[in-house]
Image (cartoon, rainbow, N blue to C red; front, side, top):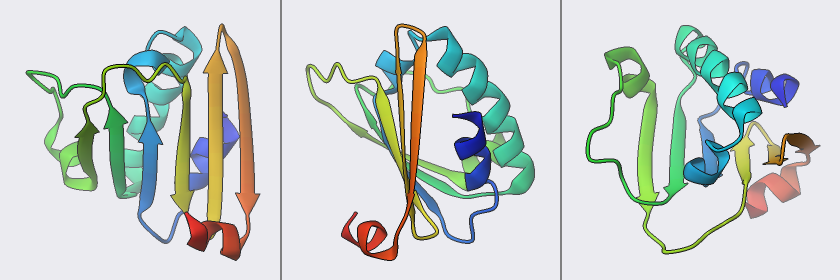
Length: 117
């Protein structure tokens, strides 16, 4: 997972992300990896557009630099229990699945699949 996340730091395009952050935040492994990744993405200046499943927090703590490279939209649905994410960038699609401490990451580099998504 760490390798695939760090691959996005070299992206020449915006990174599009779809995830259920509330479900993933229950996984300690995800939280630890994601915190380090966010700091590296800030330093690299890689722009990301995110769709998060769940309600928008009443107060979001976002620093100015992170806010300048991150656009977040919320999809309010009652129940989406999945613990995974999809990232779309640079003719690549990556899937990250974390559940009960087990992490699985898949990277597909294919222009046709990228364009479909």
